Image 1 (cartoon, rainbow, N blue to C red):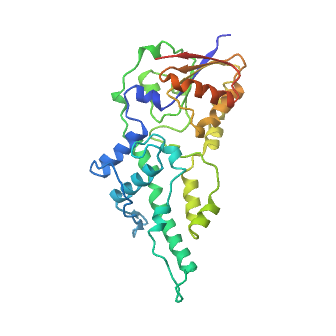
Image 2 (image 1 turned 90 degrees about the vertical axis):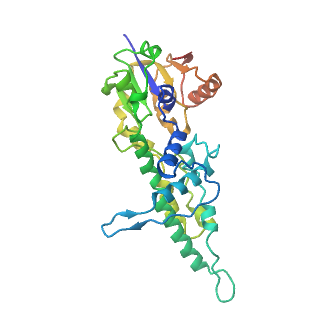
Length: 314
């Protein structure tokens, strides 16, 4: 029986095709579009306010919103002003500095007025929620502005393809369909694609409600809601694409992963794939960065992969 191949496509695939799709390209887009090309924010900016207009619309200064987002995300990024781990960073945003800006509320005896402090913290957390949620809207806006016409196909990738191959892509672009004429029915855009409600966010499942309360009592409801809003619902994505993963059974013995970093938030899909692959499957890892290969092998084994490994390059 002739077996199909499964290709797992990550953002490195689009970057290798000349598309500006890195997380740092998103940061540059924000800076160029909203901040007059000023891309470094070294001190805590003014925290914007978001109000509701007479027709129910939100009113805010987008330059101030972006300025604050760039600052708080850069603080969470391992490399600061060079964004490389945006989704994970959304799960470790630190709002302490914002609360430290609030004045201490004292009662008539000079003691801390915890009721007033809690109310101020609640207002601050609510305001932070109203501002930080814009990151998803801005990310979707950036995705819509990615023009794949600047990409060029690679003949070495063409030679790997057969008409019955299937593709799990983590990219929002339709590079496969447009550049390589892959049938849309063969491609699973697990996090959806341009023009749709894309899936984007962190994968930290921990509940920080008690920590928020301990640090800044009164902030816990809004900050917990915000953390949940910024979370990527990978379980729903898996359920929505159940048929694609079910079809891996008995049809796939070769897997090629290209430009995919095996980030923790996305391992739920890899575990599902490994569960369905036969023990004699071969996983081909791209040799773009040889130092990553032992790391990826270890992650795959931890996800339950029982087959063998090989490498390829495009």
